[in-house]
Length: 312
Length: 312
Image (cartoon, rainbow over all chains, first blue to last red; front, top):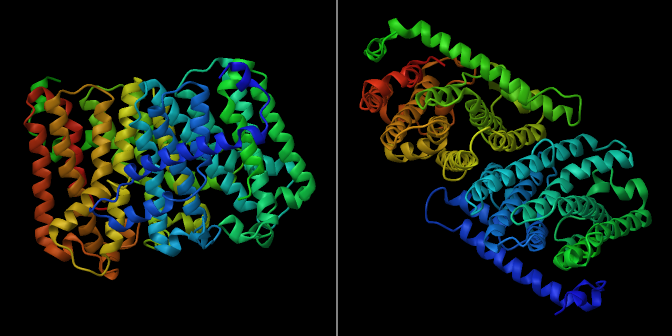
């Protein structure tokens, strides 16, 4: 296949099957790695081991691992180096869901179409599951077969994205927001931290496992900012317009909890238009890199479509 | 002072003042680093920032940081490399206390003589405080000024010690043990994971920042195993024989919660004798290294005394 044919403007009809195949292959590869990492050993603590497997395996769209693989493909990174990165970002994501679902936080009983961890097990086990998954994320990263300097940089990136300056900080702002009004700018800050930071880190870390120019790194950062925000905007939309069965998690929660969302601040139509604008922005970031880079960016381009057009 | 005079058998009367000075200097230095790391910024999320400071600052004996500094001194490590390590192990320790005190775990209201984090703030903030402190531990380690290969090794050590194979795993076994009997061997496994792993990592990580021979590393490992177990044994003793005012945390909790402890399994006298035996074992590990190494091991030797003879 010639470069020109791949670098042609991508339409959904022409590439959808091959994106599906690419996703399925990487999702399956990720599952094998996760199964191996969270092996069902016959050794105490059995219940915690089982809860960690329950929280991670056989569920989720694996958006963050897919972004790692797509950015890694862009940066010509070896697949072997990408697997521990994919595990690490998904472990952090999974731990945040387990803690977020606890009664003292969102108090939710349904996740990925199954009872949440504290319902299937118990609250104390759910808390330890989250804690242990966070440690496991850093353990797999520290065991990755990359140059030590890259390993340290990966760990710094993940720690920053998941701590007070990122995910945890965004969740704290979210907690404080219940029942009060927020401007669109405040909402954006919150979401860039709560959801965007880890999505951004997924792209950055995948690229760090390979080689990118400074201009490419910059473009990837802007791409990741756009899709990170789009992801949360679409989450707000889906929460407002879908059923729990469609989502595999409780729908309509935001308005019942009087949480400010993009839908409550901007309305459904303007929110949808904003998501589309961010999708275009993400595409433009990649397009600006020229034909050769755009070829390598095919999966990143397609994942921007997927994130904005997903139905759950 | 000649080597010989330092390598003389250490008696408490002769060195206690200088140990106190050494401890005070390092505790003060640690406090400065922790204050700088958890700075009171005027930036959201303010409440989470405040809770993290509350959980870490102005409290605690800083046993783990002291072990880092003592092992670093043994390995001739630069002080600047030891500070982030001391912060990281203390952040992990502090996060584990915050989560452990939550209603779904030990449900405790008193810690270091103050209301626990979930009492002073709220449960959701306490959970996020623990989560963010864990991320912060890995962030400071990844920012340490050490060779990248050492940085990765430090992170791997901490992640292993704090995850399912260490602290979290031990806590899960502890949870499952409430109300049932345990053999002394089962208790030992639990405590080696729950408390011992992080104490052991503190010694190992302090040494990794400098240079030790293989024989020295091995001896430090055995030393750390002995004091790690002794620490928990003394915790059990103190819980059984002290008042809450003496401990700064709720006393007598183990027997009220029907938790198996060394005191419940072995009785007070045999437990005390065992702690003394472990103290001797720890000293012997260091003594076996010869006079020059023993000079460097002075603070490790003294900290073994402190851990076994402490009153809170």
